[in-house]
Image (cartoon, rainbow, N blue to C red; front, side):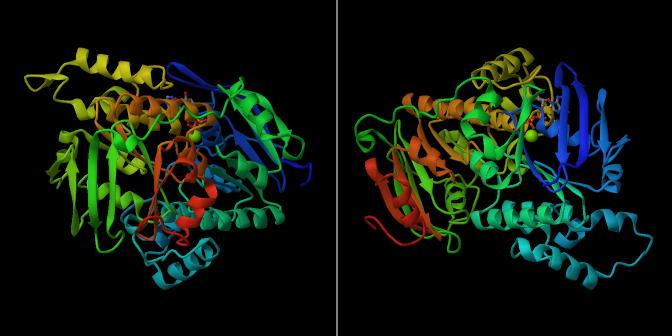
Length: 503
Ligand SMILES: Nc1ncnc2c1ncn2[C@@H]1O[C@H](COP(=O)(O)OP(=O)(O)OP(=O)(O)O)[C@@H](O)[C@H]1O
Ligand SMILES: [Mg+2]
């Protein structure tokens, strides 16, 4: 890493209605370094990157690229200065091919009326090759979220940029995709390209980055050399207080003796999962573990009528039920928190209020008309309960930071007072402080008698919270473990298909 500064921002101020998102922020990026940018949800990380990419204009402050002061009106301006940006939220055109998405800017500005598709597919394949197997001809809406993320990364790489911004790129990637991305980052660094890397995962920051810059509530709190600090120091600078990583106490006694809420038997879709059976009890947190792609989300979606199945039955509180649509599940008080927040979860261009009350529209309406008073009361109650950071619940969800959008989604589900909550990666993209808040919240819900199923790819979270854990491997159940068996070694062993318990 050299001491040559390729990008310097100074005194950046950004105001949104009711919020000062950035308050005089400075940041230096050196040639050939990987700089981590950290901060709690809503600290201003994405806003700062949007300013550097010309998506947003600052109210005050200067940007210098290679020493020259620049004004970036649009992302195209930023591109001309060699800046590439992988946004936090996937923003691909869903109905066109992978290759067309990667070269979208080129296709839009090209003067040629005919596109040489063979050439386009070939070039896309070359960029995609080191990242993993994604077919350039496939339409984006046929891809998994992790593959869509790969396409976003490929799109930025196709620009041949000098400065690459990655805003939480690994949140939706599998382990091997993450490793492939890290390798590419190190290769780019060796070529003198500078990278700004945003992540809530301390382990990644410490293994990949050279320096870390810290934002807290829109204020710059300094930078540290990774070699000279540790995660404890970074986290405490980030949140301004000590964070205890303690999980709330688990269920006392044997949760399987509690009243049974769900009995799922022989669930099979003939494709992604096969013969899955389990029970869920009042007050229990049942973890679902497995590698990404093991079929966990599909099982849960099938239970809620969101994915087809060819065999299996569900009993709810001892009674056989049939759920063919998600509405049937909601009627019974069974709700599913999706892992794909943007596409399946929130209405981005509706207010926080309308999002939270979306499932309760009947209860907040009188004679078919929404009663604003009731709607506001309900939404404000849950926004406060989940500590959603916003200037007002009348603002659109798109104005919230990623982590706070996740809380809106959770608030929406909680507002119907469900009996069974299925959480799919509930703390993805959530900062350390908010994460432990959400963990406490999940346990409190269980303590109120709600049955909770939690899919999580984060082992510490799964181990710290779950009363029992069902491990899946390639669509099959490897059994359910509890007590001291819930440990990292055992779970990894089972998830890799090396061990089965009681099946
Ligand atoms: N378009 C907007 N309109 C109004 N407020 C906004 C807008 N965009 C961001 N904000 C506010 O600015 C603050 C910073 O948000 P930002 O998205 O930059 O946070 P972040 O650090 O990226 O958080 P996360 O880790 O959750 O992604 C938040 O309070 C957010 O609500
Ligand atoms: Mg962000």
